[in-house]
Amino acid sequence: MTDLDTTDRHLLSLLQANARESAANLARKLGIARTTVVARIARLEREGVIAGYGVRLGKEMEDHAILAFCGLSVLPKAAPALLRALQRLPEVVELNSVSGAVDYLAVIRCDTHARLDQLLDEIGALDGVNHTSTSIVLARKIDRRRAAG
Image (cartoon, rainbow, N blue to C red):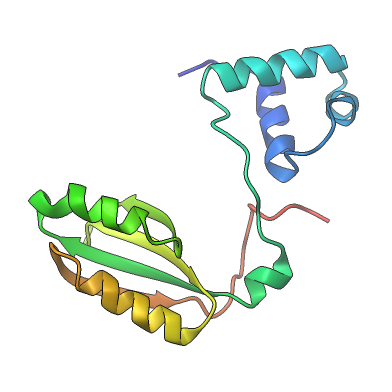
């Protein structure tokens, strides 16, 4: 793992809040030269600390989406094929292997309850899935990933 100093950590925090922030603004907030910011970002990308940049949906879009957590218990030998099948479902926005009562925890985002119901049927029918357990998010109480402002 790359050794990160305080400036690297602050830079990463600023980029997580707004990855489109200009190097000049980042430099001003960090109190360092713009060229230093550019060099640090390039190094963090090269070393794999920054794996990429993406789009975070706005509150309006997220408020109209149905978010669910689906725990999956699977047969061990079926895991590779199951992971490939779940990768092809765009509504599965995150998949984590976990300890505890289930083997995987999928984060699912759908537009309608009907699509969520259909998707859960599809997931439950995949080879190697023994059991699923799903919880629908009613309200988000803390979200440290959302950009401030």
